[in-house]
Amino acid sequence: MPGFAYAAVAVIGAVAALNLVLTLTLARRIREVRAGHAHDGESVPEVLPAPGLDVSGFAHAELRSGRRTVVLLTPTCPPCQSLLETLTADVERHRRDALVLMIGTPVETASMAARLTGFDTVTISEQLAEQEFRVTGFPAVLSVVDGVVVDSSHQLPVLA
Image (cartoon, rainbow, N blue to C red; front, side, top):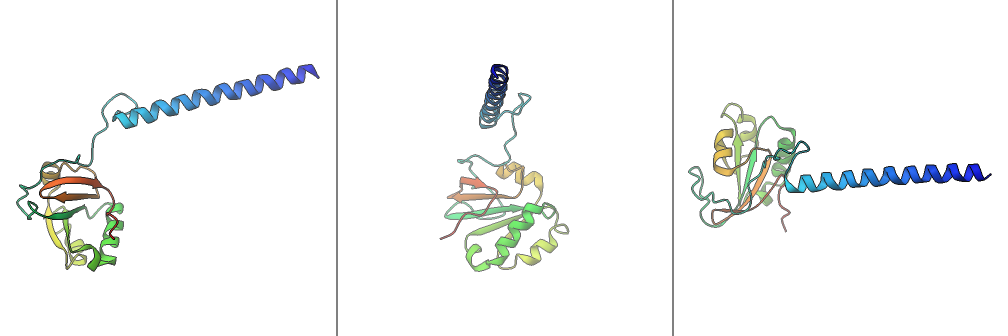
């Protein structure tokens, strides 16, 4: 029986060591992601703007004063279609301060524009979205107060 006890202790020790290694690997990966570095050491690109970005000079809509929710959607991304469904499901609730920027050409965004009647909409290029709003991942939802981005997300804010 003592041989069996030694084997059990060895197996338990091996499992504990494996658990420790996996836990430390996971902790290191979480630190890398929070620090903004990919596994190979390169920087992870930001797809949303950081708070503090000044967008008051945007020529296609008035963003200099007041509060606006700027929603950037592309016609080809599935998460954008889900966000579009949410917007159009409760037009009265979302349209009062929303500005929807449709990314693409007017032809590409025509079906999206037809669903967004009642909203302030503008069709812009992806290059302009990146240049003016520092957005490279869609959908993007920016909370803008007096021309400055105060928050950014991939989801609509919860309205009271």
